[in-house]
Length: 247
Image (tube, rainbow, N blue to C red; front, top):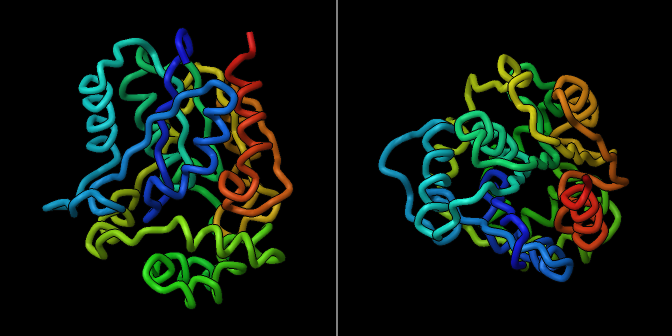
C-alpha cells in the first residue's frame, strides 16, 4: 500500500513461497504488501552450487530489495527457520529495518528443541514430496490444528511444492552452530514474537525466553501449532497489522 513499508518475509525450511500465500493474501486485505522469495534450492529456485551461511541469504535479500527499487526501511518477518534469517538480516542491515516479526522460531543455539522423534521427521524432506507421508506425520511435527483438522493437512499439501533435496540439506547445514544470542541486545527495533502453544518443533518456552531477551519485544501466544500462519492466517494477519500500526 502507498506510504506503508513493504513486509520482507523469510520462509521456513523447505517451504516454498506458495505456502505463505494464505497469510500474504490476508495481509493484503489489510493493506500490507509483502515480498517473499524462494531461497536457493526451494520451490522454483535452482539448487545452490555450494553450502551457505545465513549471512549469505541476508545479503541476497538486501540485493533483492535493491533490484525491486525498495530503498526505504522495510518491516521484516521470519517464520521458523526463516526467523534466523530475519534476525541475521536485521543485525546485518539495521538501517533497512523498521520493525521485526518472529513467528514460530528461536535464537538458534541454545534453543530448547522438540523431541528427537519429531526432529527426525522434520529432517526428512519427504513431507514435501509425498502427500501420504505428510498426512501421516503432520500431526506429530506441527501440532495444533494439524492434530485435529484433516482440512489443515490438505491445505498444507495443496500449497507445498518440493524443491531439491540438495537445497534442503544446505538449509539444514546453514543453521548448524548459528546463534543470535550474542547480539540480541543490538536488535532495538520493535519486535513481535508469535508462538503456538502446541508447537512440537519449537516449544513455547523458546519464544518466552526469546521475547524476554530482546530489548523491545512483545510476545503473543496463539492457540495452535507450528503452522499458525497457514491455519490461522486471517487472525494472525490482524495481529500483525495492529503491531505494524502501533505508535
